Amino acid sequence: MKNKTSRAKSMKLKKAIAASLAISILFSFTGCGTSSGSATTESSKQEDTSATASSSSVDPNEKLNDLYQQENQIFADHKNVWDKVFGFMSKNIDDGSMDKNYADFLANTIEANKDSFSEEEHATLSKDIETIRGIEEEIMKLEKEIAASDSSGSSSSSSVDSTGVFQGFKGKDLDGNDVDESLFAQNKVTVVNFWFSGCKPCVEELSKLNELNDKLKEMGGEVVGINTDTLDDNQDGIKEAKEILKAQGASYKNLTFDSDSTVGKYAGNIMAFPTTVLVDKDGNIIGEPFMGGIDDPSNYDQLMKQIQSILDQK
Image 1 (cartoon, helix red, strand yellow):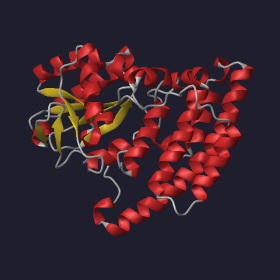
Image 2: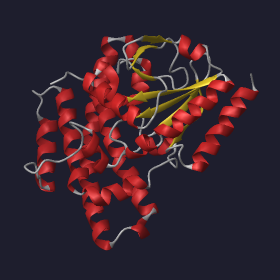
Image 3: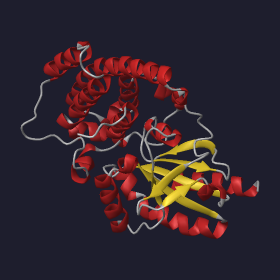
Image 4: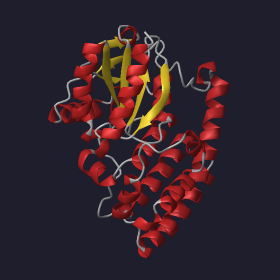
């Protein structure tokens, strides 16, 4: 098993929450799908959560991984109704919602769309959310514990600057070629799209992003993709991402890098996928992130307006 960092694991959890599990099962080797022999009752999940969190002899990162698996299993057990919930998660996510217990975020999403669920579905979601709430509380405790440990060991573990994320960037493209901050310096604006292979909305917008890249090239800009399954030189993830990009006719550059880097930490805090940001020549993120696919006309128009406003300032 790969020895992943807690932030990379956190990224996996948030990806699973943000996307349709049905597509995760189709596209991911180790994603959120459930096997026929892995059915688990909610009560046993809660007991496992308590036991995992209280065992001081277990590495905190391993505890986190176990909690993430428990939470992902909940979504898989009731996939159909949770797919409906995920469908309502798009661009209408504010920064404040990301600071809450994720169970509250899910509950608010369901409440805002309660007329879309039957009584039986609502009852199922309510029970799941209470289980998730307990898991999230344990996750928050462990993340604080790990963060404190990291910060005491290295000053580089300080919080991520949400603007200068790509300053000093170092990584590779999916063919293994070195890429650095000069990629951004040569563009008037760079559109960076965060996605992962099991995210249906992410995959569906790839062809539109390729069209946007062709258009931006004429305007002095570029589209760059970051598939979070490919971080830390994950060869399985890179292979799968390249296959998906090819199938969707997307030829623009996609990048991989260390999940412990500044941009890796930023990616680990993304709550919903796909997420798109605009980056200036100095590696600074401009404006607010765009949540949801740009294959939606309103999203595309909004993105183009912001791109044009940046270009007009040059």
